[in-house]
Image (cartoon, rainbow, N blue to C red; front, side, top):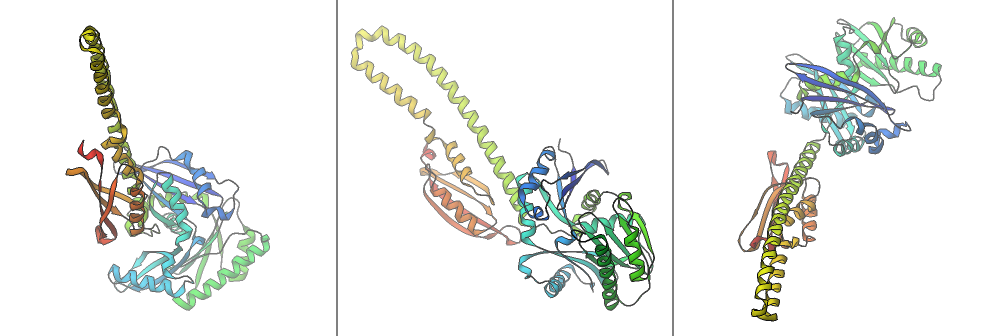
Length: 461
């Protein structure tokens, strides 16, 4: 029986961390939390499939259910805005206009998502996230290669916001600041009356000295507060919560107090839930309402791969059954031939050499007809399945009279259908391959439907 599981996978330049949740009755419980280092850790590896696949493959063989990838805030562009409280379609249009205003890249090159974080009768506060498609495409292909179903891509700051809020570490009144010092990034979060108004990735320490890093964080925080006052109004800052990994950072706290003029308290990130667990829990709480940077075609590609695998398994099973039947027939035929041989020897002196040659020839033709694999209907089915590229799903297949074969299905693009046609024309068991129709179809007419016909010698068997 398949387990109802959810996996939160955090991807950073140096490691992959994941948490697996499993539902038992009405509760989700943690099955496993683990961190796997990436080989030859370099920031560029975050964009490559091979290190990701190598690190995760040994741990995913028994996985089932949905997966959520988590990428760092530095991976994309984040902005918090107040929009009119209108229907969702209008909010989506306004979000795209916001991205077009502040992004240096065309919206066609971006994967955009948003999440409502506060709402009144008049306004809806949303956090907008935009990431270059190229930056997440390789991770999606790696997950598909591992057989993982990635339903969502989330951002780390939203997982931290969930953990901080649930821990009661957010100022309910006035303006508050949280600075999260992680190994690979430093995140600034500004809240107003318990609701975020700014989130920004300040970057890791990297090659800078400790003094330079502390000065940079203090200056960026001061600049961010100035921007917040310009956009959201002037309000006294109540203080700053400095979240650290490992030892406390009194030097950074001192520089922040001297530069920005507010008090700083230190808190350990290890006292919160692991980030991968928070993201996995967000998935169980209603993923449709949260940020999701996963392209829609990922789900189509996953379903197509599953369908193709199931089709090949079914075809292989049918082929095995067919071979067993033929083997049994050949054994029975061998027994029959043994009996015939005795009769032939008894009648040899009566029928003569010519009659004996005629019988042997007839038996040879008889065996050839039933053992020639190229004349097998199942061979044609297997050949068509092998010709299917990724992104193609068959939903109807039948043999008609006069050696005709017809099959139809859906794809993610016209180019993939044309590639399928080229592959079919190379199949030796098919003749007169013809693409009868191709056009938009499926839900919301986002898929390409097609129909092929061809002739096959086995259709008359």
